[in-house]
Image (tube, rainbow, N blue to C red):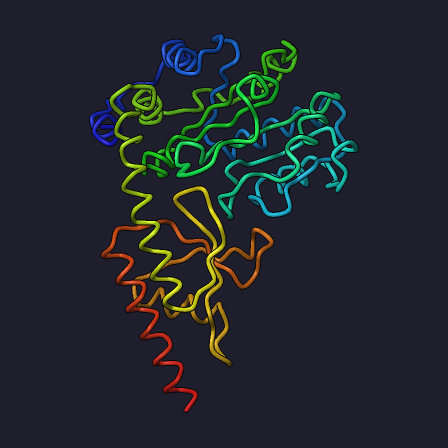
Length: 310
């Protein structure tokens, strides 16, 4: 339904520059006031923009999860914020839950929230919350109202090529900060296709389809992990439609070589070195046919390596 809405988009004109209708729908969807909805060209764009605002307000240090997207650190570096291991020494705090690449609960969220209450700006990246297959978030609904929530529905709707995101401001966010964010935002940050995507996201039938799809993903995930374990890969716990695994590599075969050989077989896995987790990969849950293709391709990679080694 979301794909159809995007495909039928009339891109011959600019969207409403104020995005009033879209922001109203998103505010209603989340049960918040219109003023708390901040649109963004993408999650990456918002990460850089809110980091710029924090720097303008005098922030000098940022706290980052141990394993996380590189954008958080890149934005901090671009604006002169230094990473710190102490939550209470940072003015800007990042968290991602379910986390990436692990798909798990974020550690130390109680201490993280306390640092927010003590005056730091906390942003919770909720990109994968719609794809949660198990467990629950660390923060209650009331606690979520005290932090920034960053949403990128294009992941859950399998439309990552359509760049559109939004953030929900804390209920007590100073109006001056909201104004700074708006002043730093480029004109028309979201194109017509992004408007269609986010509008579809708020529709009841789209949400119902997504909820139903989680049952299928749970089954596929169980099957896929079983296949990986049959290949003697070590699979780490995950609450989402993706997980981290450590492939079992024979002597003389590096992970980089193995991934390159898999790509030649039509299989692409995410190397998690950039997340601070070397020798592991992140796998999205795929249909049975793709799972079988991975298992077959991996057998060929091992056979070819053994052939060359001998």
